[in-house]
Structure formats: C-alpha cells, structure tokens
Image 1 (cartoon, rainbow, N blue to C red):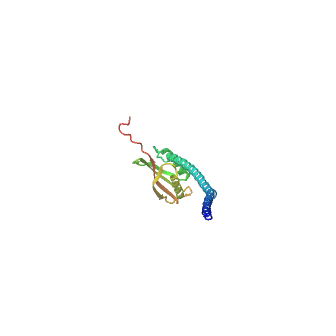
Image 2 (cartoon, one colour; image 1 turned 180 degrees about the horizontal axis):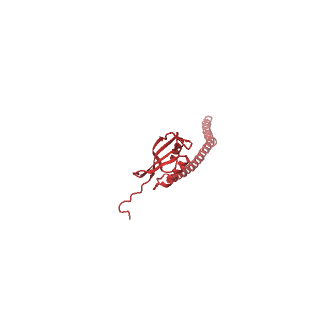
Image 3 (tube, rainbow, N blue to C red; image 1 turned 90 degrees about the vertical axis):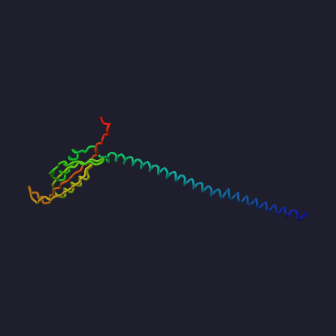
Length: 197
C-alpha cells in the first residue's frame, strides 16, 4: 500500500501542474499578445476619431462659407431684383437716345401708348421708331435687352426703306424699326379704407 500511495498524488500533482501551466499560458497570451492587438485597435479608433474631427471642422468651414455666399446673394437680389416703385422714364429714354446715336440710328418717333396694370405690376408702353442700316438695328436691339432697366421690347416691326441715295449714302440696306417698349414698375399700394389721412 505504501508503494501505490504516492502515484495517485503524483498524478494529481501532474494534473495540477498542467492546469497551472495552461492558466499561466493563457494569462501570458492575454497580457502580451492580446494586449498588443488591443493597443493597435485603440490607436486605429483614435486615428478615426481625429479624422472625423478634421472632416467636421472642414465641413463647418465650408458651411460658413456657403452661408456667407447665400447672404451676399440675398443682398444682391434685394438690391437688383425689385421692381422700381416709379419708372425712371427720363433716365431710360436718355439711355435709349444714347444707344441710338451710338449705333448710327435716327430716331423717327417717340410717343406714349396707353398703360396697362396687372396685379402687382404696371406696364407703361411707348412707341419708338428708329431708322438705319440693318446690322446697326440688330446691335441696337441687343443693347436694349442688355440694359439694367426693367424694360422690354414687346413688339417689333421692320420695314425696308426704298433704295435711294442721299448725300452720297446708299440707303438700300436701311430699315425702319417700329418698337413698342414696355417699362415695368410696381403700382402704388392701395391704402385700405380708414388708414388714410
């Protein structure tokens, strides 16, 4: 019995040693190998956080720039996009007369027509007749469209001038353009009863 006694204890000691070795191996793996992997993951997450913060700052800066552009566009629209309350007739026809002479055209007629009113819009119409070479007439019409006034050519009729020579100038290429020019403005606001005087 004494010979058989120590073997079971040795087997238990061996099994316990194996369990302890397995625990130590697991602990070493977790502390050395797994810790390195966790450190790499932490660095990766930290890098992503910095990248997201950088992108957020860039997007905020772009957003502020776009808000500033929008404010500028709104200011420009408020200044240039509103109908005038009164039509600047004198300034417009002075500009039109200058355009006519710049293009070598002769003003034949200029007279007012009956105005029209729509909801929120007044249209003052004028008959305007000029004469001159066809290419200059075309350039003149294009110049009218490019003016800064709230005006438009609402009617156009071109007639050929009979070929003749006057003072050595061949007028066979001359045309007469009869225009109806519409100038637009905002009609005055109607004062509700009881609020006037």
